[in-house]
Image (cartoon, rainbow, N blue to C red; front, top):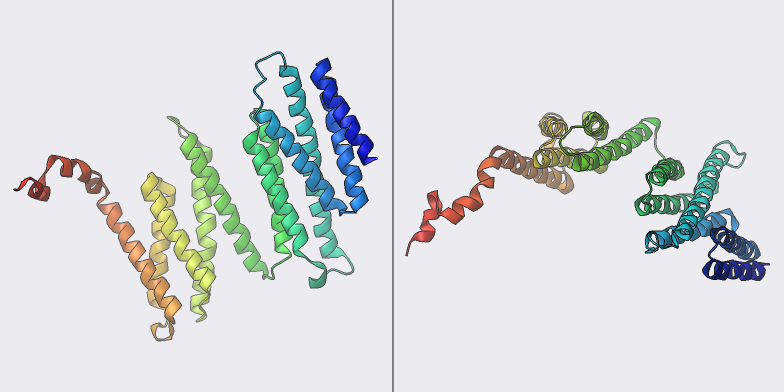
Length: 334
């Protein structure tokens, strides 16, 4: 049967080339998918294999459409048919992946044999692969409606991927809230920075709110977790390093891009980090890793403050060197 469907796909492909009928593009795409379906059934690759094959086929069709140079010629209807076929195949694959991931998550939670032995990395890797495909489809398509649709599938696929990864790690409810908050904050910061980069004269409230709430969501949970650890005389590297890195990164990007919300939140969190470090941490019990993080963070924080205070003077350095002003007059000496 796979050979029959493959021959039918080639036949309709040739009919598209010679007869110039857009309907043949749809039929060729349908026969190609049917051929893949028969091959996967023969080799018993399972549901994940079906969806990955259809997703890869649709993505290749979308790439072929994106690279097509025939849109402004008489062959434009065939290119549009190829685009619609790619959308249909990809939409089927993404929707199947989302519902399959949700069903697997529900089965692992409520099933009679749920537990650590039944949870594997396969669903997480599959969901992440489909997430990459959906993100690529969003970047490839040029139609606004298609881009919106693939953005929705990417967000939904990201949620399914997080659910799959959630089953692989053992976290307390508060740690799960912390992880979810940090990931949400990172997503909002990415959206805010992309929107800031693309906006021109008018400032968007969406960008401002994304930057503000993203900065808060990504830093406050790490700050709370770090303070709780320090109060209990515990040193957890991921919380300490994450709190320090996020605080300094927010401060640095806020100063560099001149963004008020990230700069204010970053400076506040960085000061909280070092003030609480002095108050809570027993210095005689710090190991080499903790001392390295503390000293390195202090150097980064001090460097950031110096760059912030002397930013205007540093920006004038190239012109002062070129014009031999001030101390740079030494370059005019014999």
